[in-house]
Length: 178
Image (cartoon, rainbow, N blue to C red; front, side, top):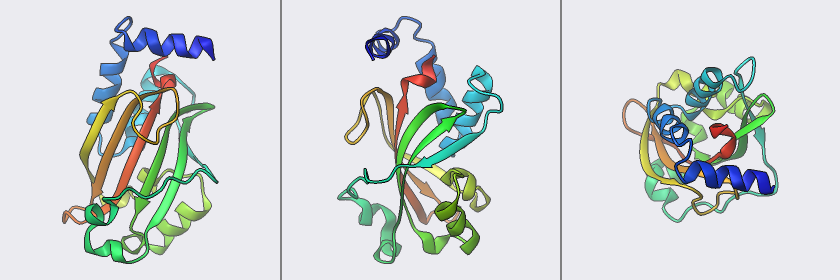
């Protein structure tokens, strides 16, 4: 534990600091955080194969943000899906994320995959060609992120016609900076 805190402090203080900007650039270059993490994992050799999996986190569900209905628009008055996951490459957890989404905009097969598999959201909905609208990004831990978070993102995923698809709150771990 102490070693992990020291590593975070070292990275955030700027020593060996090229990793955080490079990681941020990798995330910013992709609409899908899953695709960005897979690229990062592959490039950095974090695991072979560089496959990203989502482990559902039960019992620690985040309270929906106050602006959720506003951000997801009129379709938010219907059912809202929710996933709290840890995304990993191999055995290394790279992020923890809360994802509120509109299941009525997904195919039945996509909804089944989200309910029954370890496939990340970004991978499941990739055929919808969504794009990412960043809402907030900060170095370190945002509200709701676990200790050890080095970078926090909040984004709206939109369909090509600009309709909101999902709100994501992502907490990236120090494992990305090793």
